[in-house]
Image (cartoon, rainbow, N blue to C red; front, top):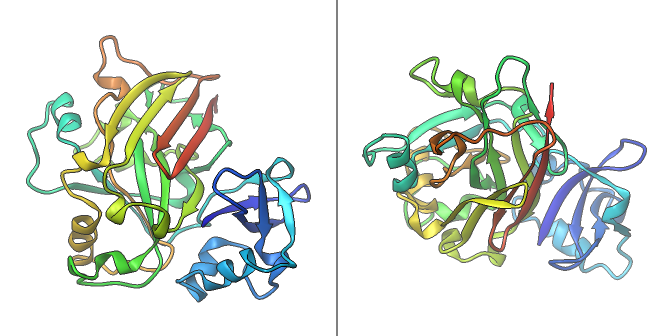
Length: 289
């Protein structure tokens, strides 16, 4: 299934599930089943297996609507944690002058940094060094701590696409990257939450690209992860409890703008697309604050 969050013309929130992979029509879950909350976080918290969504999709009396009539909303409404990985591709570590790490660089994003599919990514007044980063995201469905290689994938609700857009000058003002990764409305997220049954196990072998104004900037494959999805979950849950609705961003490959000669940074009017094979295409236009 491909689920998403939206707002209608009256600015009312809802959840949809595509009728089929490339369909322009969707089942309005809340209208079909009033017991379903109007946001994905609420649904995941009460129904980690998304059984209610499956039942609504297969309901012969399902309420069908068209994507043209809605606006995409942030996929997960204010997730409790957004855990991000840095340097998870050896080629990206190398282009930034970093040795192959022995342990991932983890940092956090806050919910106010997120931007919905087809919403603008905001370039702030204080910097012109806004960079793109193509990343695979996954969303947690079940609470987990001290998970193992054998059961790590059981905690997943699904996968999505993320643009970890970064203000490079602010990222480098301190030894911690957090400040450059948390400007308001810079983290593109969506469009779909794709359930694991539609993706190879552990999201292995998926092509990942970023395109800026139609030009391919990054082109890699998740088989090149230094730490795959299973290993990532094991590492995180030996430190903290992952909870329903938490989001994990899995790192970006080589080709980012700051490492180019000359550097390439995003500016107002640019269109940035991030595509992960089998998961979807996330599209955002850049807008000045």
